[in-house]
Image (cartoon, rainbow, N blue to C red; front, side, top):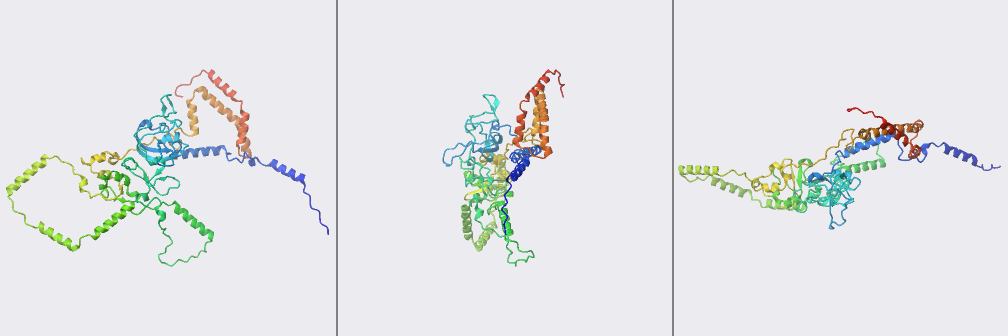
Length: 521
């Protein structure tokens, strides 16, 4: 029995086949075709329009002007941590700064920003000495050059107030705010004072921190199972038992739903639809005269810190233990009724008439003085607590001569504050853009209309010339169905260099044309 010798592979044939396969490999597998940047013109236009639509939705207001010339406003404020990073140690000296909405986009658009939302009586700090001279405002007019931009080292508004929010710290827990990790809703205090006067300066709070439980109090609470049948027997299912993989997937989906759900509000905390504004316990303590209004019309009952709530409940129990018995109340009531039923002494009718007339004359002489509402209010609750207001709370403040000076120091308690909003961008419509000048195509048309006639003709000639030269280049890819790579475009445009003379010749021909356009066309 003989064995055939092992076959020798035909090296030349395989090499030829491999070479031919490499030669026949379509361009779609080349590096230029596999580039992530490769896309058709239609894809590019569609992506550009989507980007502009997203920008209009995120930034609907005009970003053309800084608000510093407008002076002190209640406006949206941003802190730039890139230009003005806070020190690691909170006790180290720090000069915070805030910028307006327009400067946050135009001057600090690529920086790390903290959105503080609305602050009252604030002037934009962009381009002032609170930033370095290299960090300039690009929106205001430079008085030295009379041109827009390059503004720096101006004096900031000395009336600006800065709390811990400008360090990206919020709430009484001084947490570093991370919007993608934050769960639940934080509420902004109406603010009766700055941090310098004992208030909070319109800080933001977790509901749990307002009652003394901390921001993540709900994580310590036992989770309520939804599978409780209240003692009933489990139902029998005709469906087959799911596999382990399916059960794990269901558990994973349930955990994802739990993560997406907002945490519950702590016990005793009012619902979001029950109040319009609130004052934190810091501001209430700084201005204790407002405590008398807690629990009265326009104001919800006081929301105590946890330690103060426990002390209040113990005091209430002590009062209930010391309440008088029913028998003593009955005896007091009988005694009071007997005193009311006693016969009054007999007086002279003429003397009574004269006395009544004399009292009437006194009432006419004394001017009418409005009564103080505080006199009819119950005593203020003891302990530290926050106050929550309904929408009509301003109508229930006492405005007598003795109470009005307290209100006058805080205009936000007298009337609703007017917050500044930048004007909507001109391109805020469906076809516009965030920068107020339309889409890329519309901006090109606008620029073409505003240039002189010679340059306009040069631009049109350049466009037509480039279009004619690019048509065969695009046509070969359209017929083959291949995508255009970045290398293909670079190579082709290298061949087009040196064709600018024809465009200039067209401009010279336009200059020699002495015809004038009629006005109105």
